[in-house]
Image 1: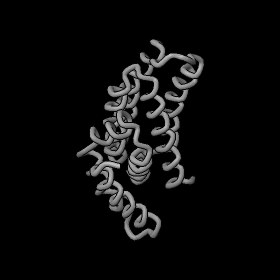
Image 2: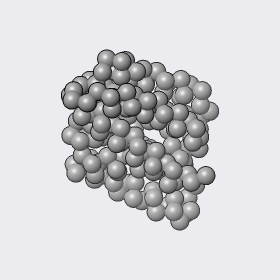
Image 3: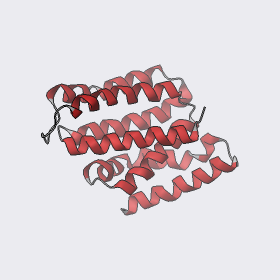
Image 4: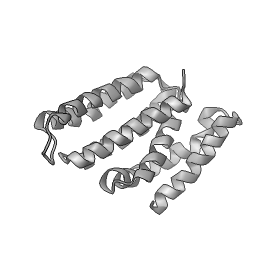
Length: 172
């Protein structure tokens, strides 16, 4: 695990404790995590997608989930984006043996930033900031993935971890 992920890990763990104890309002508890993600998202994406760091993936996913939870992002917003990406994944499952994703999947994946821009544009002021962080991270991820199937798999693991942690923080 790299130094930059270790820095985020401390902030994520502190936010988790504060959220569990209810010591601060969720937005206040995750403020440092949000600021860290905005500042260094390109480095985090490199570790998770390029370097395929599973520990970094978990820490980054939890940090993002904390931010979108604390900003009152609706479950259906997260599920809609996740459903879109899962559809791409199911298409890819049919192309066994290739190291690159199908052209159709590549086109759909490159449209992900536009779909997220639409979600961000429709969001109210408060969740907009958290969704913009998510969009920045996904924009960078899509760029890193290109047509590389292994990187796409790392991205899917990453997104599934975000959804799982979001459910943890928002069990409703």
